[in-house]
Image (cartoon, rainbow, N blue to C red):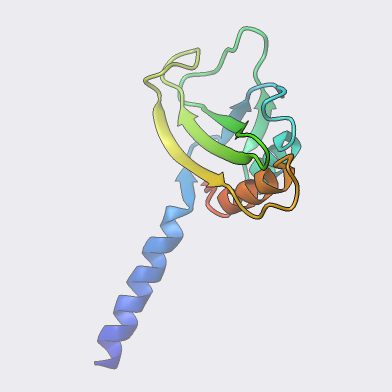
Length: 143
């Protein structure tokens, strides 16, 4: 019985560890330029991707990418009146063509909507907390 339980726990741990990994031959990842929408979290996002073994570079003006390479979107939306809520979404996609397209395969997508805590009306704290919630789930790139 002990062996059965040990085997089951080992399988469950291995399966959960695979959830946080993306297999890719080069781990090259392109990121869009910083905008006013994501300026608050942009540098943290770049640092997180580098920490997770991605070779991060910015898109050029033509938004070119090699087919098969990865690219990432960071979306941050602050909405509401008074104490605003913050919506943060991270998506990593695999390009089929030389340009990002709507039908590219999504390798990872996660979002968080933070309404609390309400320490300040500006929602900066809620956006930082939402990004921290997502940052634990962003997968590591393995070759």
